Length: 256
Image 1: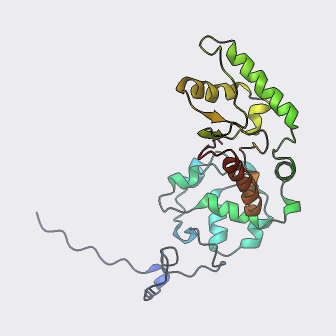
Image 2 (image 1 turned 60 degrees about the vertical axis):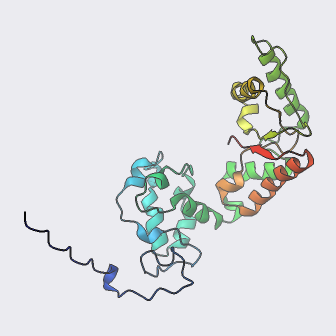
Image 3 (image 1 turned 180 degrees about the vertical axis):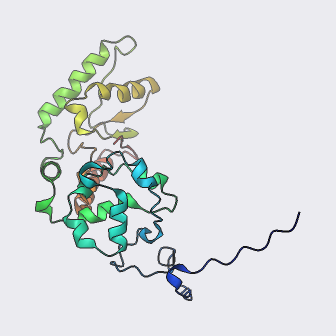
């Protein structure tokens, strides 16, 4: 068998010569040695996109109202930030991250979508997200559920668990100081999916876990994340941290 000839050298993208790498350059800045016409803080590896379509194939909402993850990446790469911010379809994204998981080039698509959303004026964020976040900041949960109603629901679920064999002594722990584990609660679990609370609580009971939930600021869904509002995220995360400190708890379970 004849020896295989050496592979030819791949040409540089767009025919540009390689720049000398500066010591302070990050891997993102040197990814393809190309200066995309977009803001410096918009480096999500969008210049790596090969338009293979894996992101679109994985996306559960691709095609709805013209949404395509590749559009987001391509417009960001071309520096078309304002059309992205004004478009409706970036808000269709669920931020599930499946596109990132399958992208062979490591483009950070979900983070890019969050950055797009962060540029939208807060009063122009789609209604349910804007209202839910405002409710969480004002009341501690997205539903504006009063504390008394919330505690009633927790005890009601606990009473149903006690009716099951092996859980006769079950008690829901609220604001238990010195517990090992603090768990947040998704708002739907005290609204339409109370049955799902039982799964976690039964595991805690069977394992003999020292756990608790908070009576205030118990919301486990940070709509600040989904709307690209980093300041709101800090507020909501800070509330949970302060609860952990007040209750002397060092472990957080965030099921959301």
